[in-house]
Image (cartoon, rainbow, N blue to C red; front, side):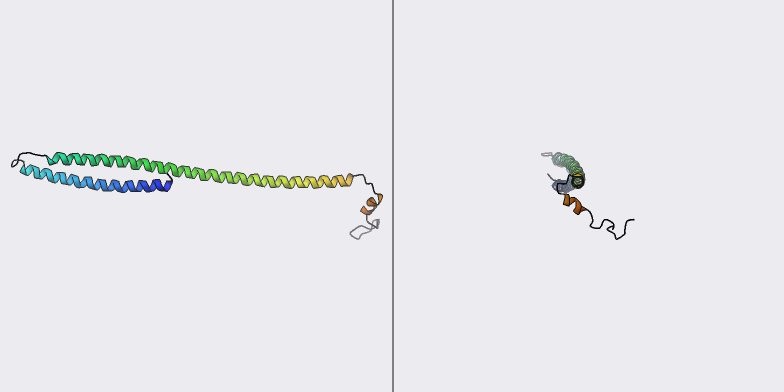
Length: 156
């Protein structure tokens, strides 16, 4: 059961508990009323059937029902609380996993960039130290006017 269903069931049991308590209260009042009436007519009638005992048994049955409902209500509330705590823990773990995945992705990107830089530097180093087969390619690497710096200043 999910949290909301458990809480709804706990609320329904709570309402049933209240109605049962009201019924017990009404039966106790009725029992008290019957006892007073019985005391008044005790001398007048012989006992064929004792309504007091029946009412007491019914009240006791309702009290047992109230106790059962209270225990069930407490059990469901505890279960709902545990489910809520588990949901919070799952949410916390989900956020931690997302953070770890984000860190891993950033580390991958950083490693990829570093690898690309390394390849570029290695390629540049190989080009600069390579043995040139064509002598004109070496000459073309120098500026045409050796006495003039590329910024326009002259060497002396």
